[in-house]
Image (tube, rainbow, N blue to C red; front, side, top):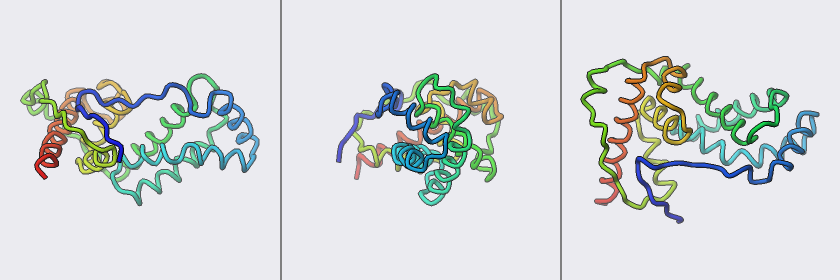
Length: 199
């Protein structure tokens, strides 16, 4: 199993352009817009593994993630005409799947966020670092075990790159609540990592 260095402060997933190249994506998107089944299948095959990982990070449950993957692709194919071609197609698609997961979490009341500012102030701004080497799947498992609200804020901030202001607007909470949930997620992940290290 491939192992990745893991620091709670420094997790970032970036893509340096689309793997198939911008021209290949543009061609597939244009054909899929016309209803070409082969192009639609090629888009699905290219995106499904990455978007499944996105859904799984937000809900932490494979069966629900598979349902969200289906919903996300229905939305993606229905909105292909709105993709302007500016920016990464994969980034545009990822936003659809993140929004699909967030809508699901809202519907199931998994995002009941409290505005406990005193709790946010009591948490230290400095999270001790856990420099242990973790496998990718092991890390995803630890993130999936977080409570839904903390997991969602963690994913939005650390993985997707949202600011606390954007998270607050998206989830209907305060920036202090977003910071508090992120801090709580980081502290819980640190505890889980230390437990893994002892095993």
